[in-house]
Image 1 (cartoon, rainbow, N blue to C red):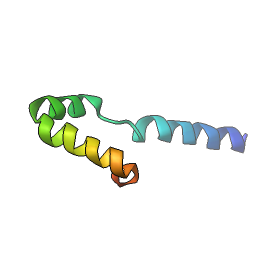
Image 2 (image 1 turned 60 degrees about the vertical axis):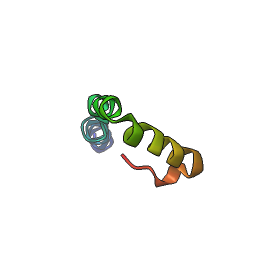
Image 3 (image 1 turned 90 degrees about the vertical axis):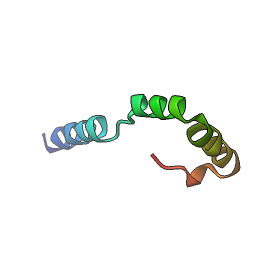
Image 4 (image 1 turned 120 degrees about the horizontal axis):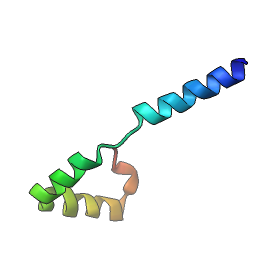
Length: 53
């Protein structure tokens, strides 16, 4: 029973606290592509570990 509770708690946490705001990312890329697309694309090409959510 304890394992089931822990599993449900972990699933709940993953679903509700690790979501990426895709709409905000789309808006930023459309409004300012030079900053939010090309700059981050270069970072991704060179060292992806520098990128965070």
